[in-house]
Image (cartoon, rainbow, N blue to C red; front, side, top):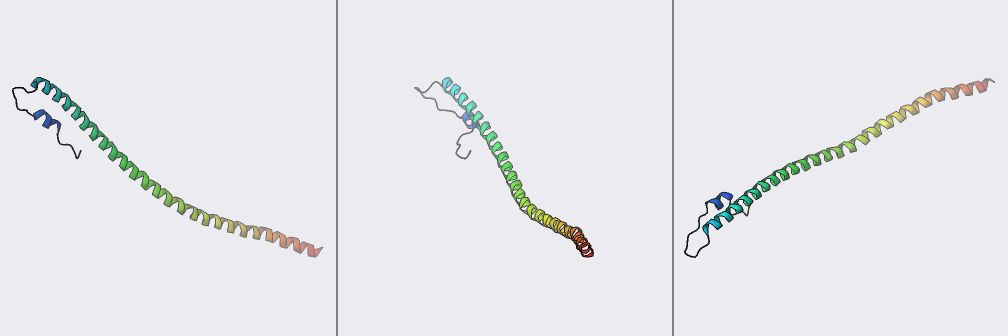
Length: 114
């Protein structure tokens, strides 16, 4: 509320000079009472919205950090998964060579015997 010149208290405490042909003071007071109520409502709503805005900004910061961590985590995971998968494939290949290679050697040796 940077550009606010009056507070509800300023409005309540405002006194006008009386002149012969001035406004009806009772009517002015009743109008100012209405202005005060509206002004207080406005100030409360402005404060509530400011608090909500602060809360939402914190939430945005929190979610932004989570997204940043998630992106970092997802880029690291495929690299580790890729190396893990590569290791598994190498082991499987070696195992196949060992098992099937032995069978091929046995088949070749049997063929030579017959």
